[in-house]
Figure 1 (tube, protein in one colour):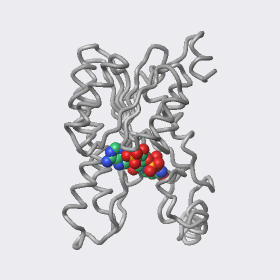
Figure 2 (figure 1 turned 60 degrees about the horizontal axis):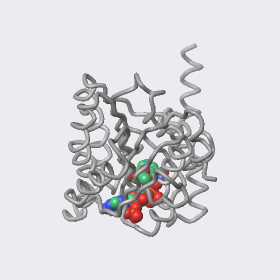
Figure 3 (figure 1 turned 45 degrees about the vertical axis):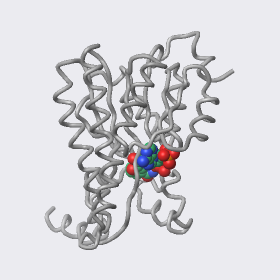
Figure 4 (figure 1 turned 180 degrees about the vertical axis):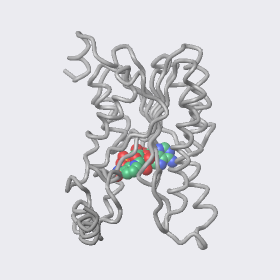
Length: 274
Ligand code: NDP
């Protein structure tokens, strides 16, 4: 029996709810689909890798649908969303999670086409999906939208201008949409992952991963399930008064002074003043 089937006999946060998730074929998207399905939600899984989506939908059981789509193709994305509504009913939650890291290059030699591609996958797709779904949510007087930012929504990063610009854009988009949607009972937030172990980090050697982890206040990277639980919360009625927010799931990174390396001199200064 699937988690969803065993949950169906009692009320759960996503009972009778339909959540559409982009980038559902791996990592954070897949974990969020599993989390919502385990709470009795119907999920529609969108991404490019059909075989991954099909296998995930089969493991989730009844109520899980999938459509293979490249989110950078706006028209195809709209068609996939309309198919999701036709198969699984009106959309209660929209999690715009698909993303690409893009090319690493200094800004003066960053290829235009690479910059535009990152913008299309990360930002424009979210804008187009929201523009399509928001009117339906407004009409029903309910709904929750969640975009996925990054620490690069809040901070800069050298040699990755397109990603940083797209992730800053996503946070801005969420805040703007939140204000337009609030009078209609619709919410919009931005979740900000820190360093979450997914395929995105597959190329990083183990040594680099441990170095990274040592700089995180919790001393470790995050797991996709830890992100999924917070994403599910923001998409659920438990967050009914939360909108226009960015919420970091980062083991403490954003809460840290970046002058940590100078901690001894800061300590000296503090002593002198006291
Ligand atoms: P994964 O690489 O595991 O997941 C990325 C997902 O995006 C995949 O499902 C992929 O599916 C999908 N995707 C990528 N390009 C497209 C496209 N053109 N059309 C449709 N789907 C696409 O990494 P994560 O789970 O970590 O990434 C999810 C989100 O989290 C991203 O937006 C990322 O920027 C963000 N994030 C992650 C962090 C981390 O530490 N992991 C940190 C900060 C932000 P497919 O290839 O099948 O199309």
